[in-house]
Amino acid sequence: MSERRRQAVRTEIARAATELFAEKGVAATTGEDIAAAIGVSARTLWRYFPSKEGCVRPLLTSGLEAMAGWLRTWPRGTGLLAHLEDRAAFAGEAPAAGPVTALIRMTRTEPGLMSVWMDVHREAEGVFAGILAERTGRSADDLEVRVHAASLNAALRLGAEESALGEGEAPSYAAALHTSLHTLERGLPLLRE
Image (cartoon, rainbow, N blue to C red; front, top):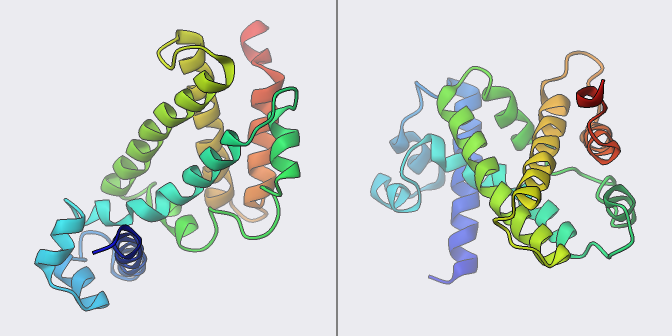
């Protein structure tokens, strides 16, 4: 099976799992339910994912993969926010829209989904450190590079959560991401007071 087809199947499984989790709850959804929803055997499903909660991973990584792509094109001498706005990162449909928003909401009540969400961000931190290291000519293991990568990662996670979990007049993903990255770009004034 080609890698493209394999990714398409993983995404199809993730969408089906998300719909079932939203409809029935995580505890009431089985791997067999997810497999049946897309017409594959449970055995096939388990070849793709080690747990039913893990089935949602492709949807949760989509926004972080897009951000990694934008970071790789970030020119020197340009602020991160300016670059992302130039790249239309804040326009159109956001990575946290639709099913991903539903997943982020479920992380508050479903520990298994929260675990996947946090694991996705832990892995993204290493990717961001590699990109920042290449940009600066430093090692990805350099503490300062790792702190910057962790800070960027936290800002992205919190922006997505603010948009998905906000009550009533919750900010759009673009607005929440802009606010979180603007806060990061300004530095840490709360630690200086």
